[in-house]
Image (cartoon, rainbow, N blue to C red; front, top):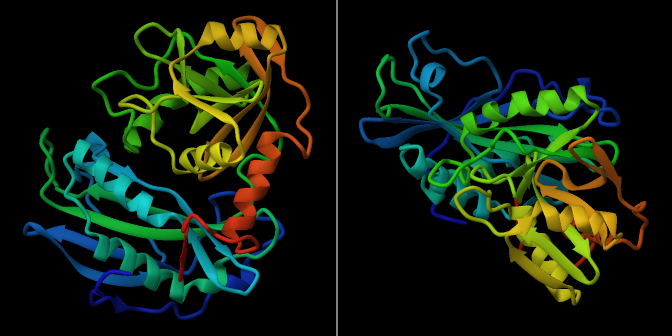
Length: 354
């Protein structure tokens, strides 16, 4: 924990907690009572406060509405078996939001502001952390530009907000994905490694076309040649080939996922040979044809582990073997879940206790 900052607190009059059915939660549609806010003006972050979750007010000329100068993060908190609130690896999200901010010409947020704002917010809304299986409290920190100026330059004023929402599973079933060989998510020299809002807006149209053909998500390929696998929708993607775990290396076109890093750490400890390298589409297609690829799955904060059952390339769909409880993806999902909820020793020091 860093040195504390002064946070003014305005509590909600009547909590909305009693209105929530935690057995049936739509992902990202139910919001907790409060949010943490900080303002950037006159060259520094200030005015730290927690307020009831509510509407924001800014003018039609606000820079964020026109030029997309915004970055965000996603992380989760879990209720442990002893009733504690545990946040999974928030220091990595703090580091990554600043890396994204640097790329988007947004002022850095200090660890003091990020961690103390997060901690105080979760102290107040700790009862919003669900304790049912496959549930968690999703946490969304983000920063966006606020200047009222129609001109292309970095804003002078920003707002940093953290809000939370209780969630169930992001995907309710194994995925059918399509290898994307026409559109690009990221190119070298671009913003692919940053969690910039515009990255996701640009991915919607290709994903929509794939969904019209019956697919759930895309496997993005490199923007230069479309010959190498990069990410899968909003996730990193991994393959089990024999006793190897194969995934694309990170760089300026592939997001450095925190769940990705956690899975690779566990895989190495379990004795898998881990290969972080360029992964060609041809290698994957040939591996699917020959039955060498036993599993494919996405890793990300929202989905944690998302099993892939079908990979489409052109007009051909390749079906992977059914995933059982002894599969790598099932076991690593269970391992992460037990660590995050305090059911298993956190020997990596990943959990941050509120």
